[in-house]
Image (cartoon, rainbow, N blue to C red; front, side):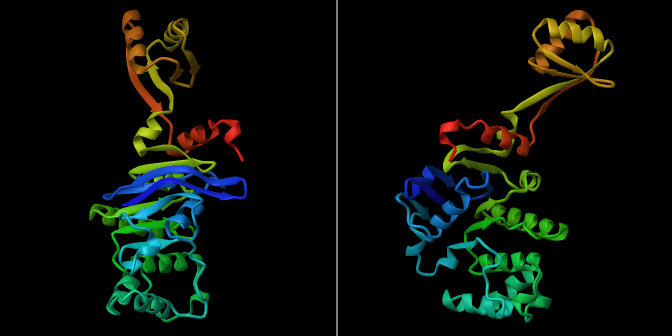
Length: 298
């Protein structure tokens, strides 16, 4: 697992990461969310030993990444798909990584096939599109067949087929009991992919929860279709609800679906629909991050 404990990273007096604690557990896809400048990339770099913490620690299976003798066997990571030597071929790039971590050569062919790059394996990386470089970065992360994967914005540049491929891949890996941490700004896609989310803002943890639970925290309204909508609207307003009429329905805030049903029953009004509507992951994320105290904003 990935274990971050009281992680603090300061640049001068400004904390980029501020006493951050969370654990990424095996067997599920964990989304890592936060506004621009929240500290996500800094945290991921600290997990890989690329930033030295001011305080706290980040461990992979109980050890710092820098203490792993052959780290690609334990953890695969993608931080920046463009940070590769454009003059090398994909095969040469992966072969060099494999040799540095005592990974057998046949594994290079396997991950090239897995990433759909077998036909372009001997082309120079400089000729690759961003989507192809993302596939190459994911292939490199898979090279050591690690139990832990950490991917920063891996969906950037991928087409529809590429997004479907990585979604299927990550679900399969999590289903095998591996630990998967995924950062992405594509909320709709993350809602389809992730099981759990960790949300940070201004370097601090503000949510560590299943995706469905986070969205359910932010109730939007209750959609109501009734035989006497005007009469029902008046009754619900009398009980403190805010009611917005639609063409053939009512949008009700301030009362639960159960309370609305009980008021309709007492008035003898038949209901055709009574549907609580919760926020999408994107809406919940925006409300959660907008709700942070001003004194924490930097």
